[in-house]
Image 1 (cartoon, rainbow, N blue to C red):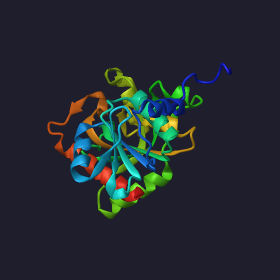
Image 2 (spheres, rainbow, N blue to C red; image 1 turned 45 degrees about the horizontal axis):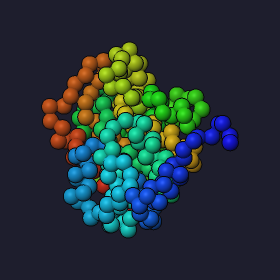
Image 3 (cartoon, rainbow, N blue to C red; image 1 turned 30 degrees about the vertical axis):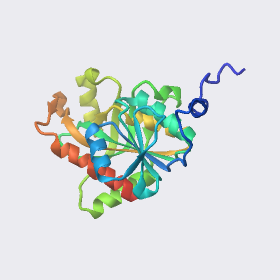
Length: 248
């Protein structure tokens, strides 16, 4: 046995679930959209007719409007490690594209709650990507998917910003010196999942992209939460619809 090989692979785990009867056979979707926020999941399940497939952490739904080519993964919690693990499983299932639609903390002075952000890549401030990628500061998103989503938003006269985001595992250790340094570099926002998804998709040769609605603000090294998150939450639905339109 090769000592450098993992003991458990996602293919083996999926095969075990099938043998145990906890995962049914079904044509895999082309695209999985991760939705960490419950408000977005509620929006999607209310607007779209879906078919639930059991056997994965959280909840997994195929969208009937797109003949099961687009799926929603939600209810799994938050953080890069859990999204990375799910990305690995879905890649083994046969999924070819991944999109994360979530909330983020704005780092730039010109951002406000509900502003839309399209990530060009994520700073690897979490711990999971070192297990998948060689050392580097960032991991990039798909230019193709980002461009297609940008076209949809532009066609609807919806403004957005594009740039790097910063993925962290530790929201209570976003040090002021780091926030100010990233702000000075033009990094748009801090979030908790993008690098995990991107870092798994890249070595698999798969496309991945992340988009965000601003919720709280950290510019100037001071934390402010919006008094009303309804605008931020509604923009998550707009992003999800734009992703579906771009990738249908």
